[in-house]
Image 1 (tube, rainbow, N blue to C red):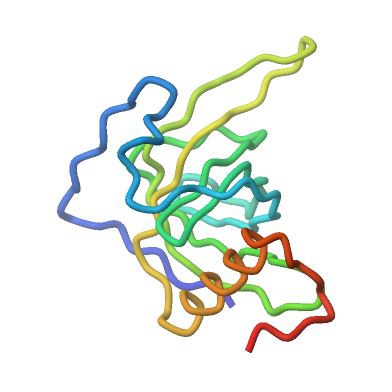
Image 2 (cartoon, rainbow, N blue to C red; image 1 turned 135 degrees about the horizontal axis):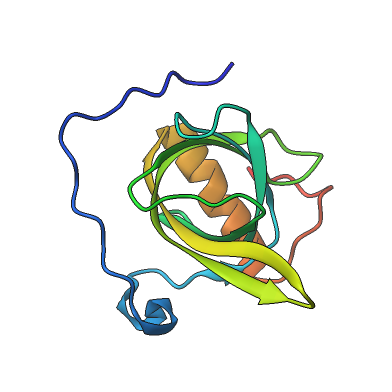
Length: 143
């Protein structure tokens, strides 16, 4: 069910954290979208979930109750909507900061998508385009 996560021998450089996480440098704008993502990693024994704040096909900004570590590889299953299949991807945590709100602690971070099938990438792009155009209706076909 979950892709096997292998530790990578070569360590890719971790991107430096930019102020306000520098949305101007992005090739594609992120779209505000709340999605549930089921995750698994070698650093966390049990599967866990996070919630997206914004997305594009290259990455997501998330909130989570779990601390994730820069460079950590995450296997993800993204639930787009109950009427659509989940999409699978592998991502690398770029940054993760602890936040406080109303006396509760949580984590906010960014994940770069490093691997996704061509089929899932096309489906995700179409889903995002539908949402972006404010035409989202779960009964409409994406194809």
